Amino acid sequence: MIFTLGINHHSAPLAIRERVAFHAESLPQALAHLVDAKPVKEAAILSTCNRMELYCTTEAPAAAADWLAEYHRVARADLEPYLYTFQQPEAVRHAFRVASGLDSMVIGEPQILGQMKDAVRVAEEAGTLGTQLHKLFQRSFAVAKEVRSTTAIGANIVSMAAAGVHLAERIFESIGDQRVLFIGAGEMIELCAAHFCAHQPRQVTIANRTIERGQALADRFGGAAVRLDALPEILPQHDIVVSCTASTLPIIGLGMVKSAIKARRHRPMFMVDLAVPRDIEVEVGDLDDVFLYTVDDLAQVVESGLESRQAAVVQAEAIIAHRVDNFLSWLEARDSVPLIRSLRDTAERMRRHEIEHALKLLAKGEAPEKVLEHLSHRLANKFLHAPTQALNLAEGRERQELQAAATRLFHLHSGE
Image (cartoon, rainbow, N blue to C red; front, side, top):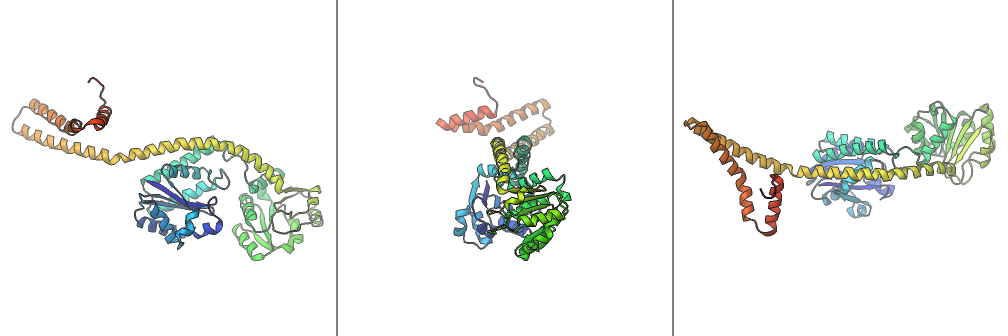
């Protein structure tokens, strides 16, 4: 049985998610430990900043939760309120939804697909990915591709950070040619930096109240860090400014921007103020060479994107439902494999036994035609002995079920 246990941004705060996160270098060891903790047979671990999920094949789902708590030295009672679990078919549906971006903080974002592929690669290398999970993830990737290519799930802007990039691209032909200044070092600035730096700008600077935190963020994106009091000096050097601090008063005033524009010889400056209350004085937006956008401006872009993307979600869910049914049919077919193999082995033993018997008769000088006739009768009788006996001994509903099964298995028709 395929089973999924997880914790994500919907179910738990960051403080809880941090306690069960897996570092990339520890994943192979963790996977081996999980599979060694019977009765888990196959396993893969997806661990990102927003989620931690165990995908297993097991007949004892509770063992996975016990292992997770034990591995991270966290009391299971502390985790229980935040955990979600899925068994077939919901576990299959969940995997398809995650791969397609339907369970992400930003619906339709493609990053999770790459993270899931990394998780599968690690599990393969660790030797913990068996037939069922391998097929599950390959189907998940195929479903994600189908959803992305046949719906508009990823075609619209649905985050403030993406909206900021979108608006900047209206002003500048290429973000890659611009110098970008981020003011603050919180979660929103981190997200914006990830989106803007994906376009490889010419220069990245982080201005923050504490230089240590700013430097940590700057190191991630190949930039430099400065203190906030350096803003008047460095502002003219930047074409794009994104600000989001916790300041109660504006930190960029009209006079500072006027001086920057003069030093820039009136080259345009694109500014995004995501702070509430504002970081940039509202009058700055009246300057001819400044394009200032607030959180409300970006929200309008996001809202229109969300409406279009929500319509695509309905289509995506329909695709997933159909593909889940297909996968469950494959799993059911696999359940018959041992029975089919046993049936063929039994028939093969009968065949070999009768061939040996026939060869002995031929060696004694029996006529080939007689031996063949004898062989065919003996094989037919042996093949049909067990089902015939079962039908004769069955009674009532059992007999009806066996008769229906025999009719279907041997392609019989009534009256024959």
